[in-house]
Image 1: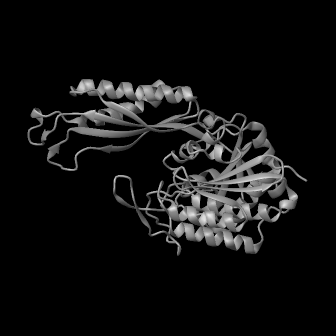
Image 2: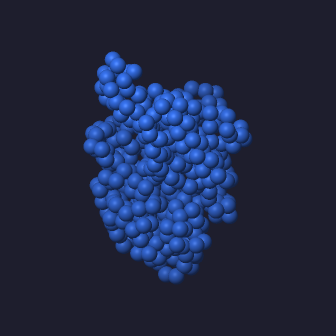
Image 3: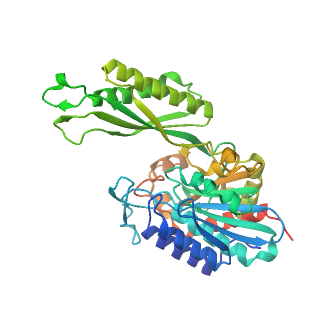
Length: 423
């Protein structure tokens, strides 16, 4: 079969994309998004189940004996205010778990992932004479909080449906639209996110000698954490330590009781992640002691993700399939990126959760930058242009709709076909 969508199929995918982009929903609140995706799968003939691990969606299409191939896309958006100026830009808002109202935007391409997956599902359903096996389409909630894959698996995704032998996914990236990119090793990093609470003794800002300011201790922790990468890590070993938030009193005339840091570490080896987390705890305890804090800091792990390492043989197989489909000039190599993702839990990294050995995973990047945007980006070479273009999570992130969806649908469909049996 031809895995490329027709103009009519592309138009249906674009309609879904534009609607999802206008109506993004935060992690854990993806009710409308899940309903739209589930509706498209049902229209294509899939048996659809909703409410898995939150708003998770699963659609099953059985077509005789053969392998079970799972295609995963994400439902959630980000608390980002869109600044693209597009006529279909999001003006939506949502509420965070602590009750704050925030702007919401699909700034990471999950709307494109869903539209491509829905398009691939329709193509596969229309061409059942070209393959044998089972296709399992999954819409995952709460990827941005690294909790949705775990929640779906804990809710019995692989017990309620025949577990997959292969799990596939793609992700938008600021490459030229019409291209895909495969890695030769890790695609994205593993991560740990920690909450560190520094305890002080509250008081009046005019009498600091009668209090103990935890903000000062927290600031010392922030500065010292940089030494984990600079002084404790080999230059050949990739590690990032980020303090994403520092929160204390909202009043300028109050010395607070506590200061709270959120720290994320990212690396390509579990041992590196463990060592970095131990260093975060050690530094927080040391700076708190040096400041005379009345209690040791409290440290809690908020989330974790594994290294996204596709099965090498499967990655080679899909690279070949995409080269045959698109031509070798449209299939690039992807260097390891320190972004992170909970996708690995659907494969060997999550075996302790789902209990299914031998699952193979593959993951590739999907270009989304239109030719006009690429030409306008400053720089004379690809590296300079890539550095200047709005990256994922930027308020200016804007996929070129037609080429992104056309390529993404074809890439997913051809990858699934290469893993299913032929009649």
